[in-house]
Length: 66
Image 1 (cartoon, rainbow, N blue to C red):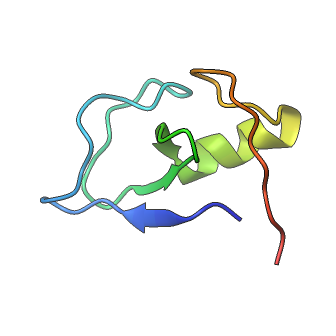
Image 2: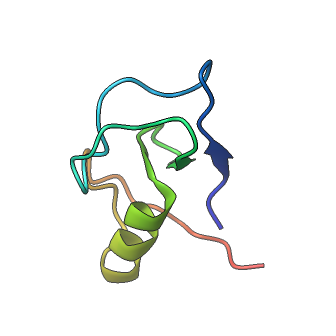
């Protein structure tokens, strides 16, 4: 599983999710890959069902299932 965090007024990343292209907003759940690229949790979850690489840098992503 990827770690995730809820965006707050103090922790919302600037910019947009590179998968859906929507800006991050307070209340969004964000997952960060080991390569440190961040995405909406649902977006990266769907992406990783199809591809085991980061959509930005193509680093391999290893997911542990609990």
